[in-house]
Length: 550
Image (cartoon, rainbow, N blue to C red; front, side, top):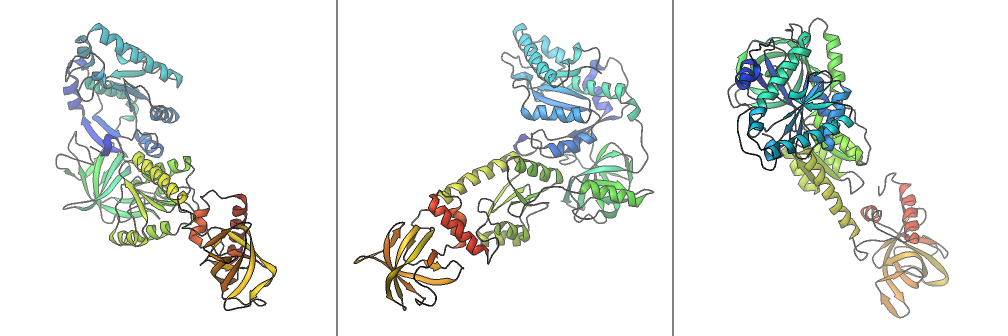
């Protein structure tokens, strides 16, 4: 139920064991299971979600890797496999969209065997070939894999389950596999824990009639109404009391329930719950929640460490805002991979401070604000309009990055299209001997253009940065001209200086380039002489203002 049909955040859905029995039917073969059910934690699959998948992976006893059987593993699939391997998380693989196999006879709500029995030999052979190809790709990553009903030793082989989520084909096979593997290999972990609760915050939001609520995955211990807990924030952990615990009905997802919540006095892991605290101001999505228990200081220190966001920053980077720690880390990871510097990256809605920070970035190609799944508060919106700052936002991370790349290309094009007639280009002149025609009001002197170009109306500066005055007019022989270029000798009428005081024969003067034009010139192709003059002007201006033109 998320934007773009792609999982953006970690969500939770509980499936009781009775429902598993009802769905699996004859596949269960009379077996009984100790596990009370399955708690599915839905983690993002796009390759930029490394940080969020790590959060999800750390909570999982068994992972379900989903691959399109028709397209095979994508780069993000291989990345997911490597993460599962790194965390030594056992997993099964669903080969989804089996119903899109050419020649497939439509059938709904059945097990894999029943569905395959209805297909032609040609279709079954094609499916087997695709299973074989995907097994080969998994073998390249160090895993032996086969169709689940052909495996005798699940400790050495990854189970592949062809399925159609849309047609509910093979879903019973998947549930049976998960419960069976959990019972067989995780039996020691299926004990009920009564210790202090530990969880991960999924989302913080306003709920009608409840106020601010926190969606939580409780993965260890017990949480009770009245417990004192430590919550991760942008700064120090917040210590507060649990006022209410709400649990979604079975088969409902905590982020988007179709049924009303059940009010609970206590819950035991693993569970997806919604909690109401006395004070949840500043709490971060993706941060930990821990019951203080007998050692509050240790718990608070651990929460602080887990809530910290370590992102390399640069004074001239872009500003990022996101709604959760994982989203922010994913954005920062992608930006770094693309060579994009980051000035500041924070969780939360866009504020006036964010706009001001972004608007004052020196590089015009980084003077932009990026936001993932965040709102803009009213005063920030006014500041955006006043400063004419571009704000790029999306609720799909890969689209946000694509939009930024498109903006970047357009911005570069705009800067490069700044015509010479509209911009103050580098210029350098030498005051010639025996060519002082008037000493002042205005001073009229003969000059040679050593590099670049000069135009009437431009201001001139000396080597020491001193403002000399404005070029009133340019004459070449008997003709008044608007501009002249390198190598030409012309007479300049300059308002402001007096020859013998502010300027002298033999002086070298430079065009006083506005700072904004200097930034634009950095992105435009100049000849070497123009580039040398521009660099000299940067040196002159930099003596008064360290980061001038940057």
